[in-house]
Image (tube, rainbow, N blue to C red; front, side):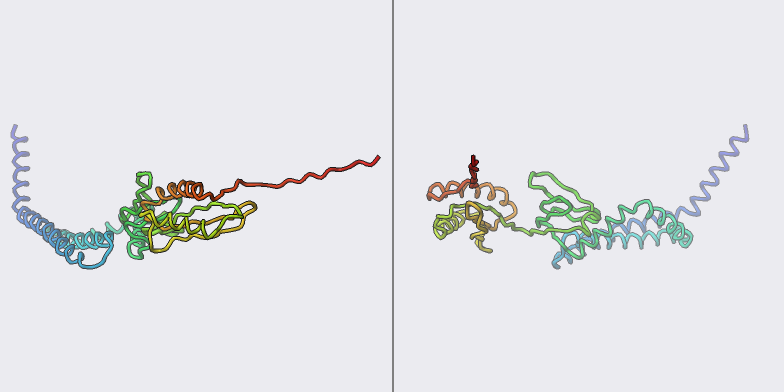
Length: 277
């Protein structure tokens, strides 16, 4: 009967001894960590206001704020561990070995991080620009350390890992795109009149940008028609709508102006062979 009581008493004495020995240190360590949390938050807020004055991309600003807050928190964590009497050198060595193993297991993730940093600092494209890459295209919505998010014209969202972006051929449209419509007219058409009518049509639509000026001219001479190239500049958001509108509007314009759009024609000659008797 006395043995369980002695064991309980021994545990109680041990807990009291540990509380007296490490309790104050633990409370001080918790106070240090709490102070570190508030200090890192205050630094992030102060640094954020300072970075607002600089012309930095949102991803760059976000990265700097996170790195600054993490650095401050690490300093306070080290101070708390030293207060508890934890030896840091063996811990750092253990973390180094564990970090090497984690790095091998997360090569793809680390590749995204390195590629993300490359995108953020070299700026091949920016948030708000329209790009085409790795078979996908869309408006850049966000650039993070791990991925780039595009909004597609069909209102879907495309998330591309950054390692798929770096090293690929990138087509950056910026904020404007050039519509390209080709239409054929008959060889007896008054070209000056046809081209002037097309320019007037483009000038009447507010979606067509005045600068840079639209390209309107003869593209090539076909077998049965003169090919006209119509290439106005529009904002990225209006590209699809203007392309469809322009095709239909040119057809109606030519009908009203009695400008012929010829069908493809091919002349076939048949030679008759006369048999001699």
